[in-house]
Image (cartoon, rainbow, N blue to C red; front, side, top):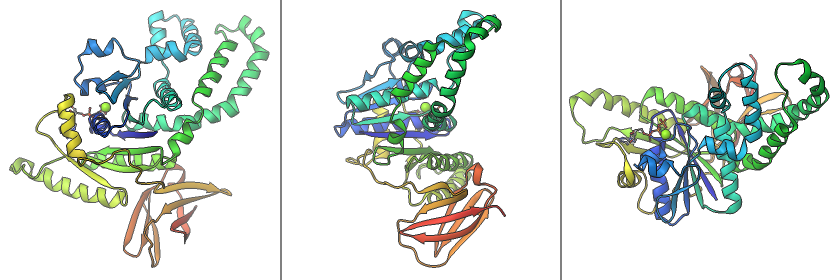
Length: 395
Ligand SMILES: Nc1ncnc2c1ncn2[C@@H]1O[C@H](COP(=O)(O)OP(=O)(O)OP(=O)(O)O)[C@@H](O)[C@H]1O
Ligand SMILES: [Mg+2]
């Protein structure tokens, strides 16, 4: 199975490109599912499906053609399916504050529930081997980050907090429930958490395996959008996910010669150059701005043709190594940079803002640093087996 995760800033074209990719994959014969992980779903809208037809049935995959289905995770159904005890407890706590039942139910949809539900689906489909490719249409960058960092956070919670909390609660519950206005969580709550955790088992290895999961970052040729794309690139790498493609959407086509767009054209050209340089060797694709909105299967097919060659396989594995990784060993931080092309010459290293700039011969890489390393400076570097390791120390 393959998982292709489409992420990027709000409104750049993630849903349209994920849907177009689904069409291309199904045309090549893959059993494909495009799943929306964005609480503000617009996948069905992209296919121009009439609201009633689709939304009456949400919560399960909906067929588009023989090979392609789409799926918008419906949180109400998910709560019934998976989150019963947890949400019942949260609702009971909220009720004690005097708010209405409807409000309590609304508030009991906790951040992350959608993402976790989507992950459980991915795990289920993997077990059932129901699809060859799952394309994930993610919410704008910040929420996608929550999606990919969730397994690590949960693992930590389950290991360090969960057993303690459970044990302590068992001991104090009989007294606490008599004196505290808020009832403490019942055992069924913990059983539910444990059960959910079991359903997520293995998802982190799945996401971190570049032969299974690839991230495609969607951007526009605008500086502000690019900044967010660079940050996303760093954070996905930080979480061990492999970005194997950048898609620059809404590039002004050459035919547009109106003077009104002259400045747009030159600024887009500059940003495009910057994009190529920053993400190399990750391939960058360009998609032109269409003369119209991309709505319905026909226009999505048109978008697919702009994005892929006739027989191009979007599920092909092209990168098996994360371009860079941030590591901590023996208390020291280091950045590891894959240098697949043999490079000779002096290694130059310097910091520029919160970026680490690596120069080897004529090659120059800018690497955005995560917050934990932003105050450190390069102290030492070595090149071994095409991997450059840069140690980072405090000044
Ligand atoms: N290349 C293009 N040319 C013209 N219109 C486009 C192009 N790509 C996307 N659009 C249109 O731009 C709008 C936003 O696209 P889309 O919904 O795919 O973005 P998104 O990144 O998923 O947004 P959100 O962050 O809200 O989920 C849609 O109306 C879509 O039809
Ligand atoms: Mg979208």
